Image (cartoon, rainbow, N blue to C red; front, top):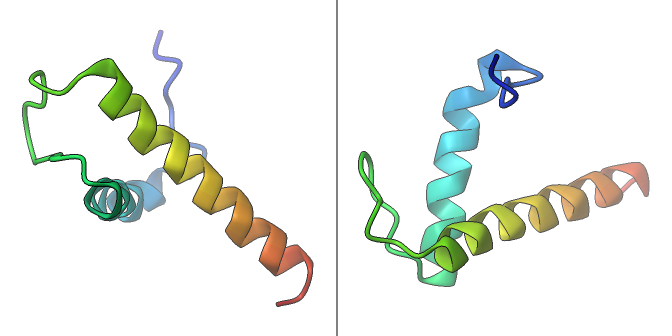
Length: 65
């Protein structure tokens, strides 16, 4: 049983693109395919920054900006 199901499966490609954009912004050498050479800190920082940016975007939308 997978716990990592997407709430909106149609958004998978956009989320993948967003992941690579965030990784590039913070200097993590994320690439297509195998990334086992990255540390858990590097991988976690990508996910953390993604969440931070998504929350900021939602807050702006809710504030009407």
